Length: 239
Image 1: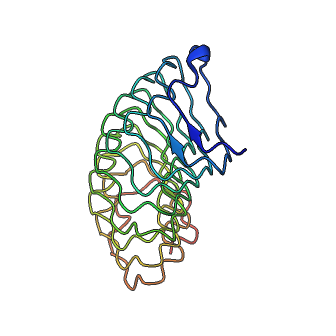
Image 2 (image 1 turned 135 degrees about the vertical axis):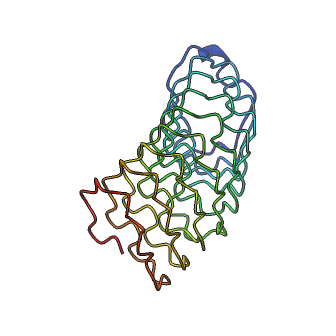
């Protein structure tokens, strides 16, 4: 469509709607949104693919402040042109379980706030959340990014094909229920090393398929990298 801007309370006559899936999907002219678009939609439960491949370059911090029933943000901002993520964007969305692909292929992001998911303690799925961000300047992952997400089980492809240069040693320290690390850092061509205790507490993990596949700058593998991961069932092409 030719929509370029979405203003205040645009859904004021549809405030009982629960699903906003695909609501602005592929509106490629859309480049600016108001922070009160969804302010009256207090029953909303999903924003999956809501802004998928729009041209928005910024996100209002209070965009979802009144949407406390939301459980699904999968692919919400995939393929957008955002350069920064407000730290309190999801502060009031404490029931969220799915962030899979939320910022997938958003290639202009430069930083990730450490407390972005601080209040989302029920999340189980982070699959491909920041994946395929190969052309951006995102090189650093905050060590405490997933600290409070103790229910998370899926980290598959979470940073796949990105420009990160190092992995914080305690990145997954508190994610003791995680089972899937498939392609977690695959094709991260600027990554030079792997912390030896990266997966030490992830004793339930079963899938490491292609976890570091294509990381061509890594020259050595820590001897105890998978020492505590005794339940592994898939280790194909891990390196």
